[in-house]
Length: 275
Ligand SMILES: C[S@@+](CC[C@H](N)C(=O)[O-])C[C@H]1O[C@@H](n2cnc3c(N)ncnc32)[C@H](O)[C@@H]1O
Image 1: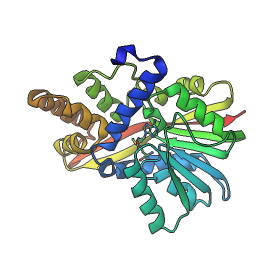
Image 2: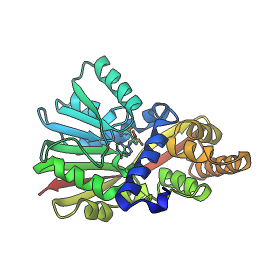
Image 3: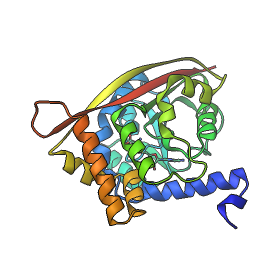
């Protein structure tokens, strides 16, 4: 049966499986260290206190889960890539932190309604295949009065630019929604729906340093799921053209007058309270 013959739910499951492959390829752990400050800022915005039950959705290698556990929370992290969860478990063990890591899709969280005081997701849920379902799952598993705090790359920011380049070289799969929608407060408010109140947000940047624009492009082509997956669908000329665009993008956003490549990547933290 072709993708066009699938009903909407089946098509979304097929898209999720495709995207799961993308995040499973390319050793995302090589890129993950870049996002530690994003997670620290988000966990700080969540104002977690000891003893709270916290869920980190799309935890990857566990940055936010570990930060919340260091703050004394009882933490669960979920992701759909087992290899990333294995790294998260090893990191928790190395720090003697008791964090539960569970393989699960963001669109179908294996938890009862109202199980958590806080749900967070750092540049994670924005990559879910089904934005509406992932958002309603976040709201469902948080108790009344609990918090939902999300960090997302913005469309005009540096990573929004990378994803824009990917989309110009390789058409997105049918039904795919743009992840950077989650970088806009009103879109997140709409996705979370009426059961999320007091939605507010703040813009932040994280500074990234590379030896050169070329080194940045090669790192992302080799290890960042979305760029790596796109490059694998191109021939040599197409791949070279995409690399050239990544290099130009980095150069256009480089801080002037410094050695190497220094770039500031914009992200938005949106916070909401569960009604
Ligand atoms: C950019 S990484 C961020 C990981 C981590 N939160 C961090 O800040 O390093 C995106 C993560 O989202 C996960 N992910 C994307 N869609 C998902 C889904 N539908 N269900 C579960 N995990 C998902 C990927 O496996 C990946 O670990």
